[in-house]
Length: 436
Image 1 (cartoon, one colour):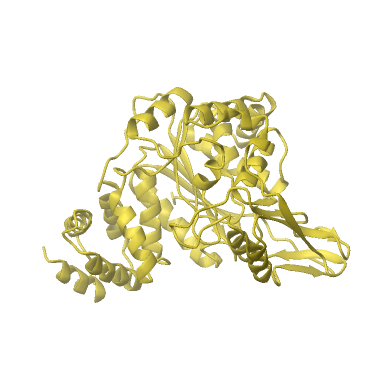
Image 2 (tube, rainbow, N blue to C red):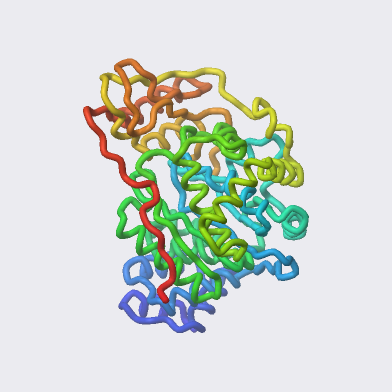
C-alpha cells in the first residue's frame, strides 16, 4: 500500500478500507509511515471525518497496535468509567472504590492533566509514594487482589495512540471528534471491559463547550463501544463551573476522602452517584436504580469504600495513613482570598478561568514536561447560586510564589460574577445510550 494514495483519497472525501486502515496504523506504529505523513492524514480526517465503519476499523487498529489486556479469569464483571475532563473533576477517585466495593472489577487506566483540566494520575500522585506506572503483571495482580487498580497507560498498551496523541497536539487536529473518540475508546477497549460508562463534560471548562458537539462525541463513543461488544452509556454533565469546591491535586484528594466518609459537596456527590448507579446497572450487579443507589450508600456507611481505597493506595506503594490523616499530603502555606465586590447571588464561577489560574499557581501544566506542585490550588468558598454580601470570600488561592499568585489573579479577572438574581442549569444534562 502507498500512504500518499491513502492521504489523497481521504483528503478528497473517499473511504478507506479496513485493511488499509489496519496497515496505516500498523505502519505508523512501526515508524514506516512518518510523522509528517500521519499529520497530513490526521488533517484529512479532521476535515473529511470518518464514516462509522472507518471509525470502528480505526479504533480497532489503534487498540491492537499493542497489548490487549485479558482479565477473563476474573469472575467479577469488568467495568470502567472515563471522563473527557474538566476543572475540579475528581469523580473517579471516590467513585471507583464505591463501585468496586459492590463486587465490580475496575481496571482503570487514567491520564495526566494538560492545560486547564486536571488529571487523575496527578491527583493520585499527591499521595506520598503512590505509583501510577505499573508493569502489566503488577497491574493484573492489584486488580485480582483488590478488584480495583488506578494506573497510567503502559508502554505496551495502545502505542499508536501515544504517538498520534502527541502529533495531534502540534498539528492543529486536537478537536477532531473521530480522533478524540478513537483515542479514548481504543485505550478503554484494550482494558478487556464488559461495560463502560462515559462522562462527557459540556461548558466553558470542558474541551467540548457546545452541547451539540458534546452530544455527537458521546453518540460516537457509544457507537464505537457497542460495535466492539462493550455495553457503553454516556452522560452529558455540566462544566460551566468547577465540580466540587477544590481545584488542585492534594486538595482534590482531600475532597474525595470527604465523599468517601459520607460528606463532600452536593454537585460532586450527585455526579459520582449517578455514574456509580450506571456502572452497577451495566455490570448486572443491580437491575434497579434505587437498589444500586442503596448499594453505593452502604459502601459509604459501612466504611468499606474508604477501606478499599486505603488498601489500593498501599498496594500501589502509597501511604494509606492519608485516609485518616490528610495532613500527610502537601499544602502550600500561603493564601490569598478573592472577595465579592457587591452583594447579591454568585451567578458564575468561570471554570476555564479558574482552571487556568490554578495552572498558573503550579497545579497544572501548560507543557507535558512541566512539573506539578501538589500543594497549590484554589478553594471555592462560594458556589454559583449562593447568596453573598460585599466582602464575602469567593475563593481562596493557596500558593508558594508571589509572582505566580499575580499571574493567577490576572487570569481570574471576571471569573466570578455577582448578580441580583441567578438561574441554575441542570448538572446532569442527558443520558446517551445505544439505539435499540
